[in-house]
Length: 167
Image 1 (cartoon, one colour):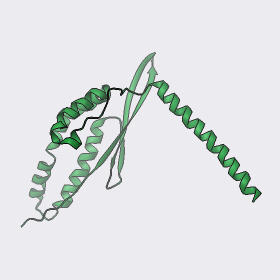
Image 2: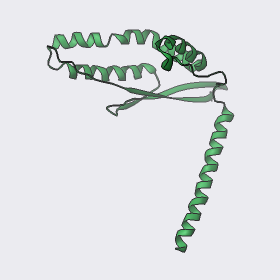
Image 3: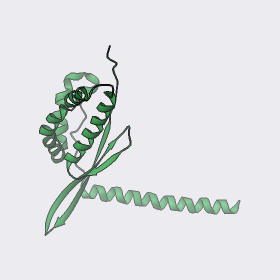
Image 4: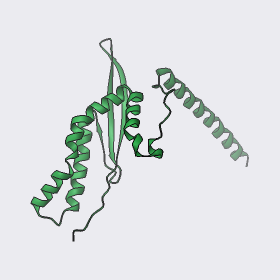
């Protein structure tokens, strides 16, 4: 009887958008960082293929560990089957990612349509009618709010220090 090994690999991907002017033309660059949640390893990337390669390496290592009692030929066969999904991701992933970055509202609607048959809880639609991308003025407001909060914290710390000195 073959012993089943339950392994989980979770990855967190964060993106950071940089908008800049070059030769009088506005440009945008997306960068990211991918983390292997269980192992704590992370890698920065500016090309999403690097993130995919990072995931493939981690998953291949897990598969090799789970099949260490198998022959080399068996390990290679299992590894090949376990990473077959990457062919699909390599073909469709970049387009899905770019479509999401260009129009997140539209992409969310499509994803919700695809999962709506999975049940009430997961298929419940997120209300996105009022959803819009953050503008530069939104970022300025948030920055101002953070600055105001920092000033208030400094004042509170000064009051606490003066009270502490009196005691």
